Length: 384
Image (cartoon, rainbow, N blue to C red; front, side):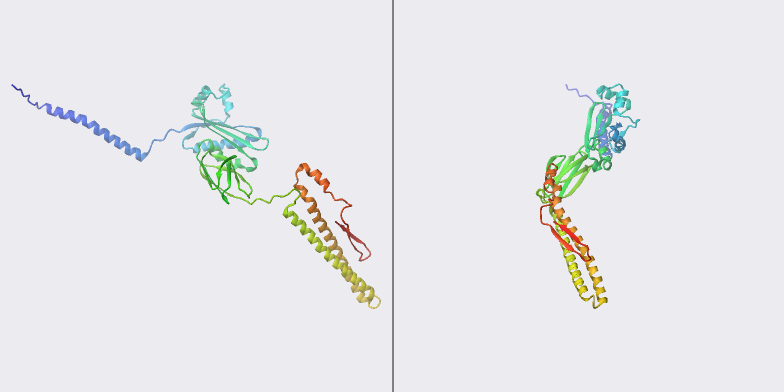
């Protein structure tokens, strides 16, 4: 005998309830996940909490106190502008003074955590600025993680005083320790093909693009056959930095004692001008002699004509004296420039011996004389 169980009417709503109860949470979770995804796409990821940075005064020698104060202010400004950092404004002091106040000899793990917790900072920024004996300034900056007692970033810069790079690029120096390798250098030259060295390391030939450079100052040197060397201190900031170098043709190599074309041409010019002046003076002397002969001939018969000839002779005599003296000086100056000037380009070790050997010997060379006696006085000009 088969027994058939009758369906209880109370079971129907219970079964329907349990079925809907199992399905409704899944539909709700799917809607929430979809809504969260849409909000995440529209709003973007939540920003991470900015790390607090304490900037210490730089350790500096007496000659660099002013520059150290300026760099300290630049570091504070760059921390405030950084999107991931916030400045922890505390009384100004050096890291060494802070360690001394906490009874620490060095920034080890215990002292680092203690100083970071007390100051409320995750990062400590400190460094030094020293001036070398040759006028160079050495900058060292360190970004220190107080929790792990490890260096996050460390940069060093050497600045030549004559470049005035410190005052010009102080903001880049401040950014160099806060950002990673976010700089790019694009180097071109005219003409192209120059070999490039950056801080003494060969990097290729122009045109050249160098990526992933740390921010800071770099010594860029370009060399090209037949051209002079191009050397400059270049500041690399965030993004692309263009360097355009115009290579100059190298000067012709000079042999020892060669004064070079410029000085040699100047010497030739002086001698040439002197020779012309001497020629004009000689011509005026001839005119003076002719006037004197004519004066001697007409003086007894025509006193008026004689007076005119006397004045003309004096004028020719004056001009002859001026041109002869000037010409002699010009020729002498040109000769001295051509003979003595080349020794200035010699090496210092041999200057004394070569100068001794190149002295003018009073007995050497022919002596040339010009004599003129327009009014009884004798002018004698000697030149070699």
